[in-house]
Image (cartoon, one colour):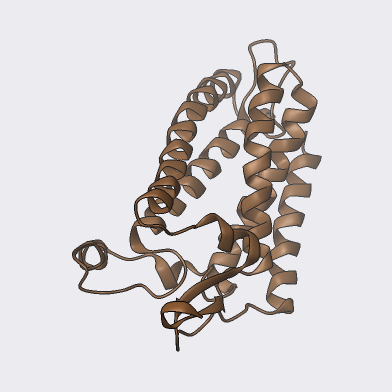
Length: 217
């Protein structure tokens, strides 16, 4: 173990699975929308809804590195990190936390708009579009289309940050998200798992909400 470092668990299986499924589903959602494969676009959106809901719940009751309380910092915490006055242990650093919050927030907005969106003929509509007026549903569709541009910018910034860490700081952030393990100074405490019961609770709630929303269409 060169440099006094040791491998420690950092990301649990649920966090890694959600991450990579969303990585696959976002371009799939774009592709199906661009090619007017709206049935598949709808299914992809419902899947993303369930994954985001699970990640939000897991961010409250899940493993130590998944919990927002463990990595989301205020302005002082970010300033201390940037100045080198404080470390952050394993998991997301305070800047990475901003990226995570921005992506999850924008995904939530984007999926939410899609649920209420409808075209002017009402032929292609989200499962909750009948809850709002036609004008509101059409506005949601327009904002849903605009939201993709915002989401794409956030994704590019996220990928750029990963590349910066790889090329400038020689830190591979992708490998731990695949293996669940990272190199840390000897004596660093690893991730504390969330447990099977909490996982079942989070997964059950997310699945139930996604199924209910889908059934409204």
